[in-house]
Amino acid sequence: MTVELDWSLLGPPLVAGFLIVVTHVAFGREVLKRGIIFIDLTIAQVAALGVIVAGTLQLGDAAWGVQMLAVSAALVVAALLSWTERRWPHLQEAFIGSLYVVSASFALLLLANDPHGAEAFNKLLSGQLLWVTYEQIIPVALLYVGILIAWWFWGERTKSLFYFLFALLVTASVQLVGVFLVFATLILPALGICRINRKGDLLVGYSVGAISYIAGLWLSFAFDIPAGPLVVCLLAVLSVVAFVVLAPSKVGVSGRP
Image (cartoon, rainbow, N blue to C red; front, side):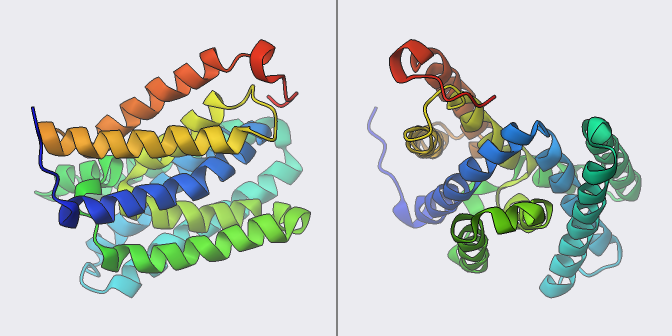
């Protein structure tokens, strides 16, 4: 079967996907290293809660109002988790999981009487990757550039700001592609490359992510199936392949978890 691709439709989702991969694979390694696997789900859910609160307050047409609420909610949680990590590091994962459950439950309560609540919640979870536009991408891309510059060039000085940079990253991403894709792009490639030596892991992680987004968007367009869930599944498959095929005996052990 020959499918003629509409690049005017697929161009923005591909650009968005590549931006997500470039930023999230790098941060995913740090998340795995710290052992706080569900931090992205929690901050993404809290950011989504901020969007839902904005809708409840009828700020849906005020883009800056929505962004301020989403970012503020995520930064408050980032500050809280940064504090709990210093005080009770052995309980950090429990705090993260608890915050996720509470924020998700609060979001469901806010949407309970909304006739479009289920649709809105589903959109925040699975995203609308195929309908991303360049107008949405440009401000997110500028934010990503700032975050990556801080992370790569300021090195250890930004590690103490990890939760805050991460909160800004995830808040923007979840509104672009949804909670599921944010979590999958952060964690799955990071798991796939965790046994590769430091010199080659990012390249493999980026390849896993890029191929998943390209193939997922093409198959979604060709067979009329949801793009977000399909990309998540491809990320899982390719990450497993990377984890199994790129064994320590072939590429060396990095010593990282």
